[in-house]
Amino acid sequence: MGRLNKHLKNRKQSGFTLIEILVAMAIFALIAVGSVTMLTAVSAQNELSDERMQALQTMQRAMLIIERDFLQMVPRKTRVEGDVSDILVFAGEFEFESESDGIGFVRSGWHNPQLTLRRSTLQSVAYRTQNKELQRLYSTYVDNVIGFEPKVRVLLEGIESVSFEYLDKFDKKNFEWIEAEPVEELPIAVAIIIKSEVYGEIRREFKVRR
Image 1 (tube, rainbow, N blue to C red):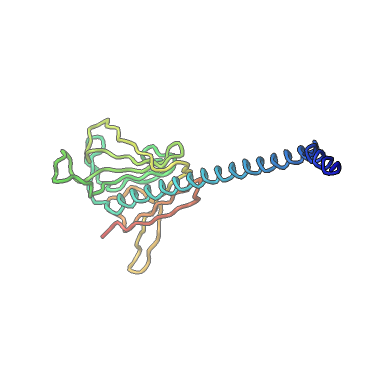
Image 2: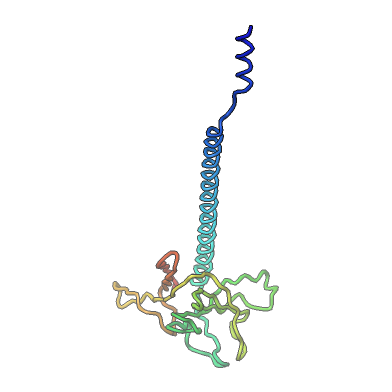
């Protein structure tokens, strides 16, 4: 009986030692640090994925706008400073105050349901780069008054430069891409070359002349 009481007393007095408690706290601390590090890494990866997805969607949207404009290029002359110009496509270095190349023309297919708006379905558009932005210039009317400033829409950011080329035909079999310049007739095709900080060089080609 005395031995049993002594054994019970020893069990009641037994417990964790200071070293065991410190070891347990250290283990829990390591687990907590690891969990926080993992959560931070996952969160950063999700943010990076969201940014890349958003950038990709912006690029796709810009390419759709560019494709729509270039595929609907039409041989429509415009007024420059009040006078009718024979130039159908304005293109070249620093055109439209671009920091690289610029290009401007008239496109068709501008939606005007049942002609309810006081404008035609034609639209003057231009492309340029400024402040590392690919900008689309446009106006409500093809022929605008002297001093009119076009509206500006930023399509892409982080753009180093943009350039344009025409597909030229020398004879029945030979074709060659040449540097774009002002022309009095529509080119066979137009290429746009975009140098992006994110995607590198992007080249798209569009058939213009039908």
